[in-house]
Length: 270
Image 1 (cartoon, rainbow, N blue to C red):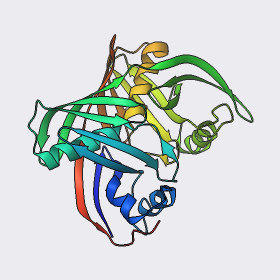
Image 2: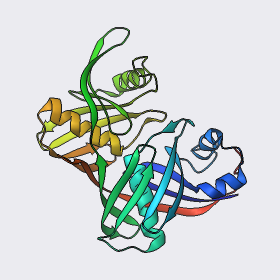
Image 3: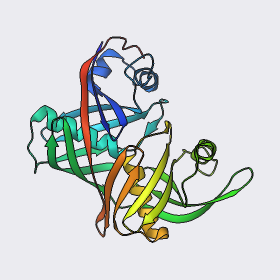
């Protein structure tokens, strides 16, 4: 039995387990089976990812597993969900800041407002890195994409959004392409106006997701660098709209996260 919290941001959902409790319950440190089990949408809690966390005053740390058990450096929506847990547990007021330690480094989130258990933050996501245009050769075509890192890898394909059949074919083909030995997150991004970008997401280790924080940020950066978008832009994913600002000091992502469940997972076998 493990105490569990669940939160989501725009439909991108995560199960949260306290790291120390997991270590006591499941010794050994191999938590990939645990991630696959608890993220199962039919036999367990269900989520796009598992986050093992600990926290103290206005600060937390996170270890992220995708639904398939693979690890990831950071999640923008998971980051914000964890900050929402800290605000929820510590009864913080708007104006407070929460720092989160991730594999990709420390990120700071400014708590803007609360509506019930929905918390809005402006997160400093850091500077985008290794921005370049690349060509990815698939079986029957060559895909041009913007490649970059937001602390995790992204491949952004600019242009009209694909239909469902093409999305289901090209998304996984790019995500697992040999050009990306560790895999990559994939975003299809259409610059509708300089201030509005629409995206579809194929997340590494998960598949299609309603939203992605780092994917939203990466799509905005690609749209600015190679698509004529504004450095202050709304990015619309299937789950909703987040706002991205690309400033000299880095990328800032504004959106909400919502705590939806606190309980106990009875079948806590790994």
